[in-house]
Length: 100
Image 1 (tube, rainbow, N blue to C red):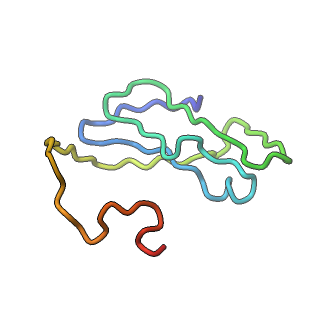
Image 2 (tube, rainbow, N blue to C red; image 1 turned 180 degrees about the vertical axis):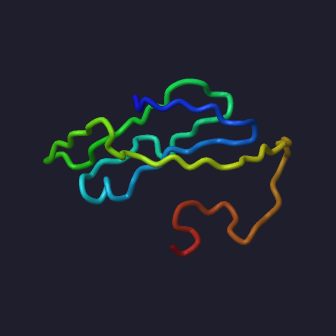
């Protein structure tokens, strides 16, 4: 628990991101990054953390900056079921298929 509650206006969402310094220095990150908070949520924001460094315990104290909250407008798509998809230069290639 963070002690922080928000009520976002319709058309907005908030995203809980890890802080890069916490991951770099302590191996501490947000489990489900980014955590999504939609406009309909009411209640306290919780942040699930994981320590990726199995050799060094990490203590978190009240007031520590463990994550960052990004508030952004969101749009909602209207989806239509189709029998087939149009082609693209990438095709059905998955991870690494664009040469990365």
